[in-house]
Image 1 (tube, rainbow, N blue to C red):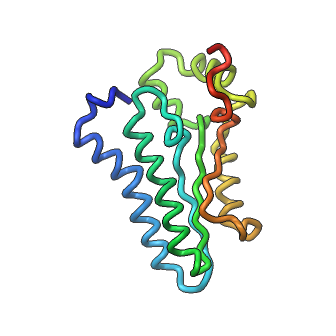
Image 2: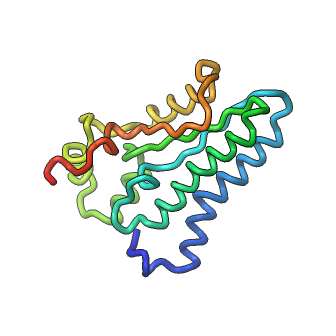
Image 3: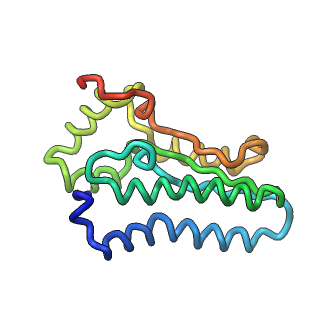
Length: 166
C-alpha cells in the first residue's frame, strides 16, 4: 500500500505475479486436467477491484483483472460444461487481514471495530468459513446454472456510497 507514483516496476510485477499470473497458471493446469465434461473453477478477487481505497491502485488492478479473466474463461470453456466464477470478498476476519492492517494502523482491533460500524451494513466481518462455504457452493452440484459471475461477500460494504460518518 503506497501512492501509485511510488510503486516500482518490480513491486508491480511481483503483485501481478502473485495475484493474477498465479490464477492464470493454476486455472490453465486445472482446465488441462479436466478429462470429462463439467468441472468448476472459483477465482478470488477483491472489493478493491471495484472500489479501491487510497494506495491500493495496483492491487485493485490485479483483482479487477481476475474478474475479467474469470468471464473470459467462462466464455471459452462453458461449451465444455466448465463453470468459472469469481468471489469478491470484502474485509475478512483472518490472520492475514490483521497482519496487513498492523502495518498501516496503530490499533488493528480499534480499526476493525470502526470499519464495521462505518463501512458495513452487517455488524460483523466476513469470516474465512463464510468465504469457504461460498466457494464450496460454487464448486458443488447445487450451483450448476451459475457461471461467469462475480459474487460479492462483503457484509454490505460495496452497497453504501460513503461510510456512515461520511
